[in-house]
Image (cartoon, rainbow, N blue to C red; front, side, top):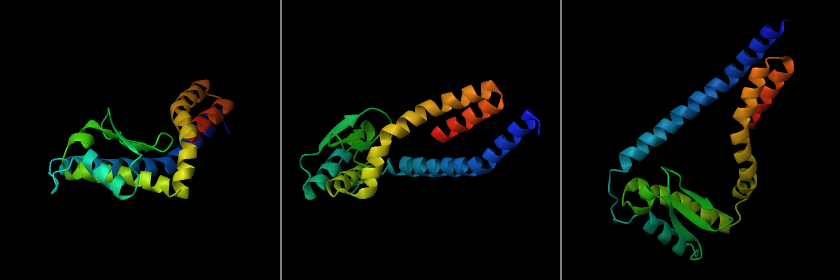
Length: 164
């Protein structure tokens, strides 16, 4: 088989598997964003901000040592199990909306999982550094493989996709 045809077949096969996953991911992301936008305009019944909701959930769970910090970015909220810090984006931290309360309670739930040594969270925490490197390096390796346009380049490109 000619190298160009072989590359095309591999690329087409990759698209058959990757495209549905990509489309489903984009649909899920759009639905989450849409729901967040809708409920970020609706004030919650208690009038508590996201930071206050998170603090209450943590305190009720006996996790008074977990700090809550405001961070930049949109929907960049996360719990850092290494530092025992719950970081909430500015909108979540200071807004008394249903969306802010839901996101803050969700992140506080990760702190509870950490305190109970929830095994899937431990695995996720161990994988985060590796995944961050792969997400950053994968596209670069993929592009290098495409530029090489050889059988070896194809393998490099596929490796980059796997990393990403």
